[in-house]
Length: 203
Image 1 (cartoon, one colour):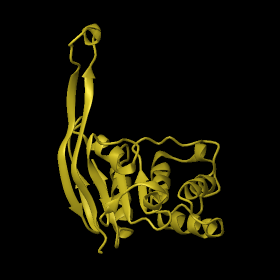
Image 2 (tube, rainbow, N blue to C red; image 1 turned 90 degrees about the horizontal axis):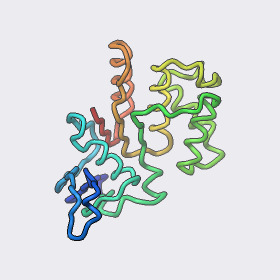
Image 3 (tube, one colour; image 1 turned 45 degrees about the horizontal axis):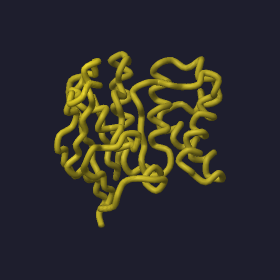
């Protein structure tokens, strides 16, 4: 089967308001429909997930990455449920927030992320060097993250998304907070490393 990633009738609602009356008999909490019947099939290529704040982009990303369960619907990779370590090994994800440990070096951070994806230990060093070179961070790889600029941290997060055999990569606001020159650089980095992959960019 060709590489396809499918979202089939994804629904998700949230309780948007809880008051004291909610706890009274027969009272119903107000709910907000975050996603309603989202269905799409993606094949290798670049895609944009566009919408204003509150449109459901983050909810959809959390469902794809497995940190949130849908109320109904399925997430499928090549026709099979997209879950567990088998799926995590081929999923790359760059979150919007830069939640990095400043005491880590770039190399240690990438090695840690490689371990989470269960990349074989013998292959980690070469894999770290490969993705660091792809984002032009080889020289800074052994510096502490506290010395990294915002743009360098963005590139490091892009690098970790490409670790291993990533077939699906999600970038959540990859150019947020960057100056125009850095934005162009980051866009080119993603484009130049996208061959044969499904790339989803939320913005």
